[in-house]
Image 1 (cartoon, helix red, strand yellow):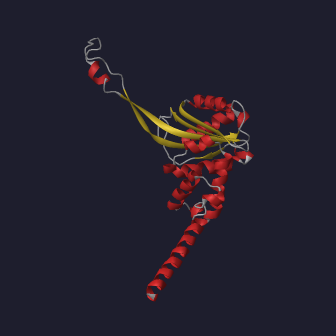
Image 2: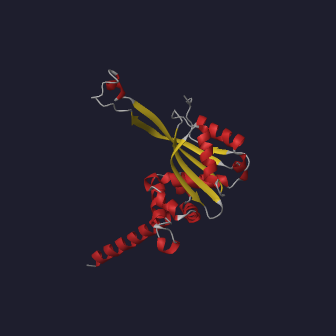
Length: 236
């Protein structure tokens, strides 16, 4: 009987130690004392599981940075966050941090998303006006390369219209636009666009930078910063 009691006590102690270690590794876990939201905890957990170096190296410090990131952005940002793409939150935080340097505004980030296929015109088979073209026209497919463009700079009135004009000048069509203003005066604009006819991002990024510098210097705030995956293709 005494052996059973000793075994039980040992198990309880071991469980307590394990729980303490888990809490130390995940400082965001105890939301009751830290004020972290369920979303922040889930994003933190995903990044920790993926072994992101800056998260694993100092979880407590990163937890505070993540909390500050969500606190400075509106609720609409949290609603838009997809926890399956937790790395996007990390990317947005890095872009806003880079934007704090006046010489790097606006900060651009470009990445290829996917190819979108659009069926060609379907011709009525009863209409003989087009003759033999009917069969081929119904099978034509248009290809759109979708890219994500993130822009961060100082927030101000009419910034969205200025950025929209910039993208249009580059030849891009805006399919989605997500606009967020931070509590400390910065902006985070996330666009999904088509109109760039390859998967490459370097050429598109350079085109955006040059167009912004030449024609939209009013919002450049100095040298234009950039962040983009490297892909070496040419625009068609």
